[in-house]
Each structure stands twice: as C-alpha cells, then as structure tokens.
Amino acid sequence: MESLFQNYPIVIAIVIAAFIVILFYLLKRPKERYIKVDSLFTPAELKFYKILEEVVEEYKIFGKVRVADIIKVDSEKARGNYLKYFNKIARKHVDFLLCDPDTLEPVAAIELDDSSHETQERAERDVFLDKAFKMAELPLLRFKVRAKYDKIEIKKRIEDATG
Figure 1 (tube, rainbow, N blue to C red):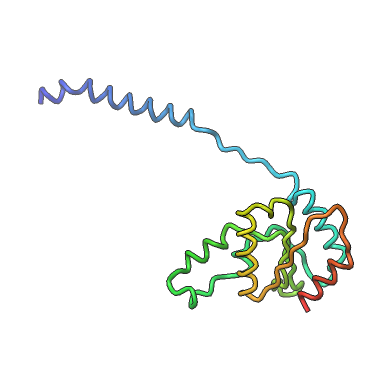
Figure 2 (tube, rainbow, N blue to C red; figure 1 turned 90 degrees about the vertical axis):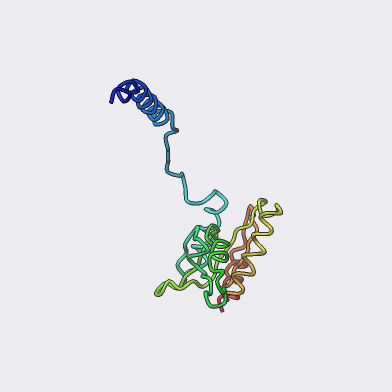
C-alpha cells in the first residue's frame, strides 16, 4: 500500500501532462472554414448554361451532376468488383445533364472542354467517361469552350444525340 502512495505523484504528473498535450492539440488544431461559392459554374460554364437555356426547351438542365448519380455499375457484370467500378465514377461529374421534364430520366450529358482537358490526366478521364457513357447508352456530348457559340449547331447536336 505504501508503494502505491509513493508512485502517486508520478501518476498525477502523467495525467496532467496527458491533459496538457490533449488541450494543446485541441487548441492548435486548424479550424475548418467553409465559404459559399460565388457561382455554381465557372464563367465559361455559366455562359454556356445560358445558351443551353435558350436552345433547349424540351429538357430540364442540371449542372455539376455526379456521374454515379447518372449511370450505375451493373452488379451482375461487375462480378465481385462493384466497388472498383463504382469508385471510378463516384468522384467524377459532368458539367450539364439534360433530363426529361416529367420523369427526370437522363437524356444526355454535356461536357464543356476547356484547355484543362488537354492534360494527359484529363484526357484519360475523358476517354474513360466516353466509354462509360457509351456502355450506359447515354449520349455524352462535348463542346469546346469558345468566345462565341453557334446556337443552331448546339441545338442540332443535342437533337441528333437525343433523337
């Protein structure tokens, strides 16, 4: 019993030291800060969105839609690799999605390709998405960012893709 009291100051010192370390960690931990974005779209995307609103009357237009919410993994064909295939689409999005106004069934996806699509990583992503959307039988249209757009051309490409 006497040896327990002899170690008592050491135990108290360890507890106090642990408390100080935890307190220091909590106080020095970076604070999470979040702020609202100025716009859902980049300036180029916003410009294209406004043109889509003019030329696409028969569909609802959605922006920045996650690919995994548009196409899904065929679990029968994935054969135990569901997560592998899901992870390939889970963190990707398309710039715009056109949907049937009554059912919200996806009709076509649209990517607005700027200079970032010229990098190798982005080019590989684009090839993958093109294949995935083709497999899902959902048109994926690509438009290059331009200073000025031909509204008739955009409307025709959408009509051709959506039949």
